Image: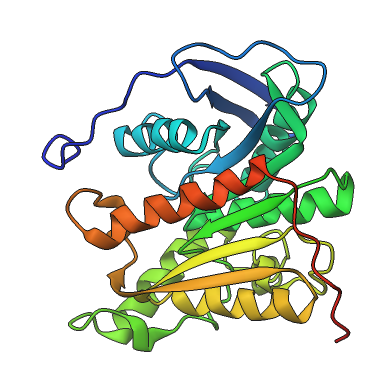
Length: 296
């Protein structure tokens, strides 16, 4: 399919690492630099660093998938950043909480080694798409709870954030897909990842939208799609962040579905999404805007 769509990775410098994750399978990552030359280690300054997690319903895809690999290379080049793509184990062979712990290990490694990569640990961002956005948000929560490293930005594309599925907006499902069937399929994905325990589904590292508090989360930009039931998750999360005093923006792509963003050069909205994400990432080169705190 990638060949039919004309997806071909550009040449860029990369480097791979495998990290031990105590009590869970190892985590693999790939570092992408914005040019075909690896950046030198720096003592001060350096490029912004984005830690990103791919989507695939917790069950498929990975950093070797041609579409994701090509996307990582282009985003690093166009935004002028270092991108660290983390890989996590697939369900149902491996289940929660292994995946967020693996992603946390990838983020910690990237923050700790940022200077060695030619990056700036004070210009870090976390991002992900779909199930990867779930894990990115869980990682940001873990960072707030465990280390509180500075994170300048969180970017979430069509995120899945509530595994109880009560925030699904089934009015957004594309015509022709019966709502009971969609809910059944969503339930299968959830069960394969977290099991049947309702308590586990409500764990904030499984369903970040249900965290008791979102105070202290990084400034966030969210993209949802009109013809996607997960627009309910992303937009509810934007409201929850705003209520917690976190700077947040949420953009709904009209007429688009969950996978539209993958069809660059074929769907105008996909090309705009790429430009929008790149422009957002390029703000990491600037000094952050400090917004007045609003009493809630």
